[in-house]
Image (cartoon, rainbow, N blue to C red; front, side):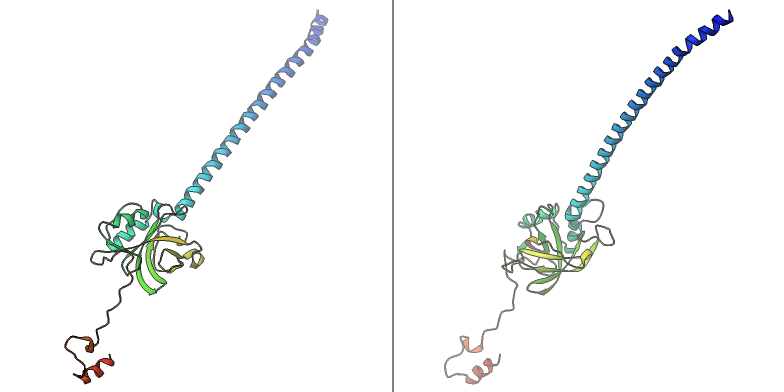
Length: 239
């Protein structure tokens, strides 16, 4: 009887081994499937992270290149409005058209005027700045906001910023602006729509800078005749 039980146990051992092998095989497959699923999930997670990172980089690039599009910090529009007193709202690129009905406009810079930059591919919302000082016919100083990152931060105010007219016609239609991170004029040439003059300082379109009128010589006046008042003529030549 004991021998019979021992033989049965021996016969059962291969079956137990086969079952164990089968279980191990199934478990291995399940483990492999789980690893595969985890690998696929990890791959998709990496793809999503890459897409999000690329989107964030693209957004930051747009904000850096477009001063008027920034959110969460000072933009060029409210600064220019407060600094100049010119009450125009909306994207900077729309200021030039909006000013036509209420403000004077022209191509000549004046102290206190708003310099209206055109919208471009790299700066689609445009930019506005306030003229601080006329240096010469081709150079001015401006105050503006959200142009150069200062200490790694956007939305900063910069004052007495150098701007140079690089247009072929010398009409301020294209300029280069000082860019703090490189400590020099920016490499980009920026198209300018023109200058918006505040109330009481209106000027006709494309008006040249005003120059003081010369006083007429005394000998051209109606009360002078040849041979009369020669000393007055001599005196007028010294003017």
